[in-house]
Image 1 (cartoon, rainbow, N blue to C red):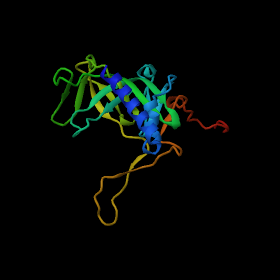
Image 2 (image 1 turned 60 degrees about the vertical axis):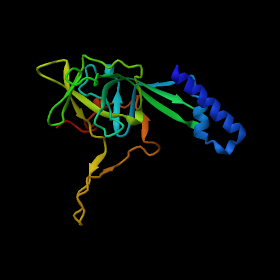
Image 3 (image 1 turned 30 degrees about the horizontal axis):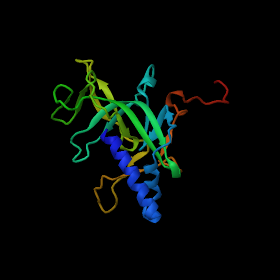
Image 4 (image 1 turned 30 degrees about the vertical axis):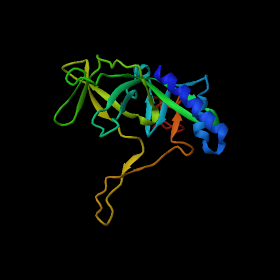
Length: 216
């Protein structure tokens, strides 16, 4: 109810301001106030922030794991949220504005020792049998970091969280001045946008054999 009231108030406020002084309202705010198109796009996968995401259901009989999602805490980042991707939804607004949402099953990180554990090395283990009871399963795709879950030997319901490094992220060597900088050089491979749907891109289906050569 609160969210519906805010959306109505936001629409009314922006539209009134736009009628009084059109130049005082940016096209982005005007687009958001009008709301998204009722028709939405669904993607079977998505490439963003250097990570390639797929649904959990697509990992069956595959050697790769691309559905793990992590969202860092807003303040000091001490609390992170972990889940698995189940849907990718793209909302389209006027003026070409697009918003991509990830719908996830989130694991319970509210109770330490039951939902998750963190050892003295800072390694996090989550209980995959306990999901977070929330009415907000959606998160902005731009907020997501990819992780994968390694099953524990003693307890099959538990898994250790391993953070994935983005693709095309290279650690640059130290310069001649001895600057011990930890900054990394991120080479984007997409020229038009840093995000892209990847419905047809599959690592597992690449053909690594050389064709056109006679057998030796």
